[in-house]
Length: 147
Image: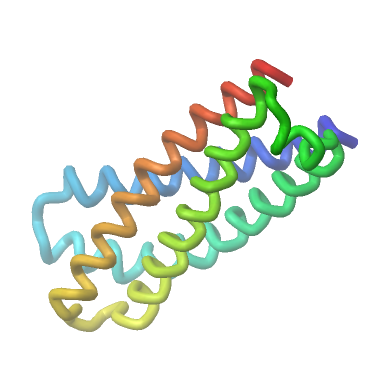
């Protein structure tokens, strides 16, 4: 059962991170602002729904592995795993908050002009999601090495 849950977790991480990298790359390499708006208008909502499902799967499978492996007993101990696990879980909370902020703004303003604050929060949360994905992935590799 653990292998199946880990497989689903890795699949979800692949879709989640891959989508994030794809949209981040679109923002960088698609220089035409009108083309960007058109692409994001159609791709954004689809990405939002799909990514919400995969983020939920990531959290559920992550929690399942956390409790199945008895890590709730390890997280507060003095060992090599605890600080890495604590950092990773903290970053998962941050990326979830950044995702909620980004999706709220994206769905509220899809096809509309954003206010300067909405633009700032949307771009900042998007950048946070991208960077946090890479850091969380690193901590996941560190944990897997120790487990």
